[in-house]
Amino acid sequence: MKNKIALTLFTLALVSGCGKESNVSKNTEVDVAASYQSINKEQLIEHIKVLASDEFEGRAPSSKGEALTLDYLTKQLTAIGFKPGNGNSFLQAVPMVSIEASPDMTLSIGDKDYQYGTDMVMGSARISNLEQLKDSELVFVGYGINAPEYNWNDYQDLDVKGKTVVILVNDPGFATQDAKLFNGNAMTYYGRWTYKYEEASRQGAEGAIIIHETAPASYDWSVVEHSWSGPQFGFVREDKNKDRVAVEGWINSDVAKELFTQAGVNFEQAKVEAAKGSYHLDMGDLTASVTVNNTVKESVSYNFIATLPGSVKPDEHILYTAHWDHLGKDTSLIGDQIYNGAVDNASGTGALIEVAEAFAKLPVAPARSITIMAVTAEEQGLLGSKFYAANPIIPAAKTVANINMDALGVNGRSSDVSVYGLGQSELDNFLSDAAKKQNRTIAGDPRPAAGIYYRSDHFAFANIGIPALYAKTGETAVDEATKVLRTQLKESLGKCYHNLCDEYNDTWDLSGAEEDMQAFFDIGYQLSKENVWPQWSKTSEFKR
Image 1 (cartoon, rainbow, N blue to C red):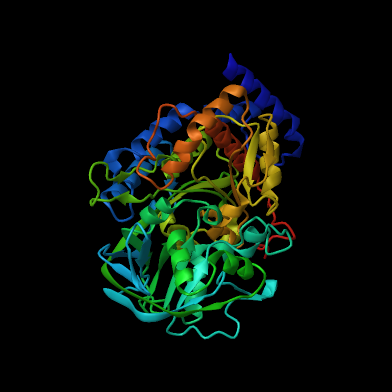
Image 2: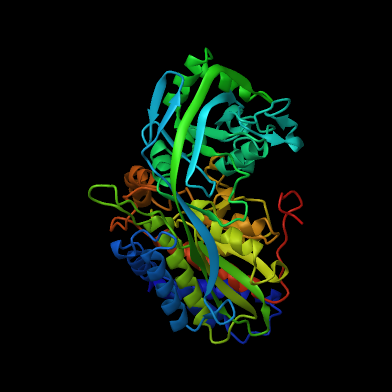
């Protein structure tokens, strides 16, 4: 009875808006509502169980897990009638290199040695078997930002060639909570670790060390320990990444406090000064030494692309994305060695299949093509989506919008939908309409300080001008029972991010994820009408 009522309500919602439709599609409102209703959490759970099983070994790029994942996606999408999205192939090759630093290293600073994993994690982005720092002078460069538009340059009048820069995570807006500074509590790209290493490299530094603190980083030290150890993937480049600093890595906050004390500087006071404006500080006679021995392997990983050709304008595409990869396995561990990645991101990959199947069930294909893309190496810095953005199979001008699904909610239904990057584009309006049909509203980013809009694959598409949406189940539980469940799951879900315990759990409630998938289908169907082109907002940094 519940499904029949929901189907009737959704049909009525479609009818109420049908006056806006100029599409020549012969699908009736009942056809569309039936496809919408076919999306369900039970099927999503089955996909998650397969993709996050031990057999798939954590889905690392260029591994057995990748082969199994691509085979699973190929079988699933072929069975429902999707066609290869790259000519005659479902795959786009992404040439990569794996660089794995030996954990047998010590970071020596001042009169103390620091240990890999517990105190620090060091590595190198250079495609080289050996990189090192040898008595490299330390310089504190505050947030390590050079941003002319904010009148901010921590490297102003500073020569860091041959030196190692020490950098705070996030940006000054978070530290001060000043809404007028950068983007206030919401992280900008200048707060991302990727930017900090890039800028240190542009400045000619020899090494770059980021200080980890849980609140501004938005994750605890265990995420650093697990995510930046083991094979680290990058693109194959002719210069072997020699333009990058020789050594880059992280130290925990306890180590940072020791270093600043050795330098005769109060760490907390230095942070306060660094948030006031362009700032750097000499760290006395402190130098860093570390030897990084790398195992380098070139390999090829793949983006998976499948298309349901449009019935009117097949050259124009609605693009759904999720990353299929996770962290693989760590054979040095005793006991459990597999980072299964159930939430992150077997959930999003399974959701791709569910949404695709809903479109495939329509009696007539949508006017525009529906393209499903599962990208590789998101965990390594959005490599798969970045590669596609630089080598697009579908021209950006023919890509109507991107809807990204990463780490769906597993803690029940919400009366709202959290939009990461709320206000960036008119896609918010489409989501608002879809949510309203579910008696939900849209809300902003619940964790703006984490900079999540810059941390998943939609960012690569936004960077080439494609309006991109990333949203998921919101923060307001729909009822008291869901509030209780969320309280029970909060600690474990937080602890399991990028950890061995991110495995499917029977206590999860994916009813919120079901509603999200249905909303994403609804948005795609509305966008599939051939005269609809969502635009970036006038204030968006991605507006072209």
